[in-house]
Length: 461
Figure 1: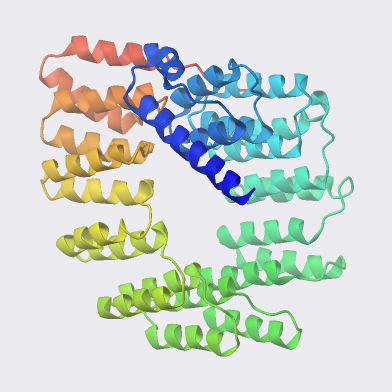
Figure 2 (figure 1 turned 90 degrees about the vertical axis):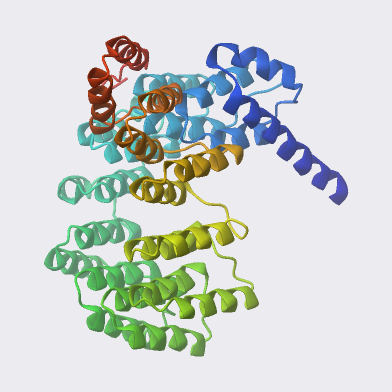
């Protein structure tokens, strides 16, 4: 059974690679035919893998999603619908999103998480009214709004810098939904991010008065709030309170302290805090190590960074893309671009780069007037079947425009639009100016038409 399971995982992995390769190279019009020719057996795992890989390419992902649904013996899982909704909402294709919600309703697949995803995506796009509307129409779609949905709305608003609106809704509806520790923690984090320390303290006090004992998550947020407000010494006192109250601090809480000391260039305090965590028997995870690496980067102690990476290896903690990004960003910021590239070359053997990694490297080479190297990074990224984000596309288009390479910039722009990603006004405007300068209004008109083919975004369903 074990070997059969391993073979199945391998088959899904190989099939996913085959499908992703087709989607990366095949023109949109011939995609269905090309997918049919792969001969892969469509399964929920395969579809979820592909949708996850193409999370930055909403429209190609949706075409694959539609193709998969037509295959014999296959039916979309709830997770596949959720991945597709997230991907489409990211590029603001809200009409299709609501169509998917309606389809899920017909199949009896809708749940609270579906609406939480949509609220989160609307809020992130600064569509506050639409986020609140989504919460208010849950009943209409036969999903009863509960405390989890209420917390989902508060979280969506707070994470998109709309904590005042979240507090207003909280105050108006706390009679309908009895708040729990999570409700208060969400508001606490929101006011801390604002930043508004007095309001954060007020929420903490109200929480205790309401009989909700702060848990490790709440304490972690309070430590983070105080650190962001520049009160790291006060945050340390909160950690001591936790020890007295038998609420054991986590690796995350220590990582916040280490990171803050790093930002304040208090490197000795950062090291002492990291060592104190180990003395208390709390195992450092990749987040804590990343905080320590960031602290050393802030004071330009890259030899110490190398030692930390060695320690991570010996303790069985694998670096992640964040580890890579912290080091590369610091080196670029200090003008050590050659070293940054060497780190990139080494780190890609240890962990998968993310969109931020590729964007930083492409932007770095464009700013160094080394466009060929930027294009090599772009080519490598494509060979790994990684779908670039809007920021990655924009960084390369900017570099190409600054080199007056309108032809290549147009190719990249067209690919961006094909993926369903709307270029920002600045990015499109930059290319527009170059095309007008070269008298290529015909190409400009073509790109405008391409953009108009993207589905128009309605406010609601």
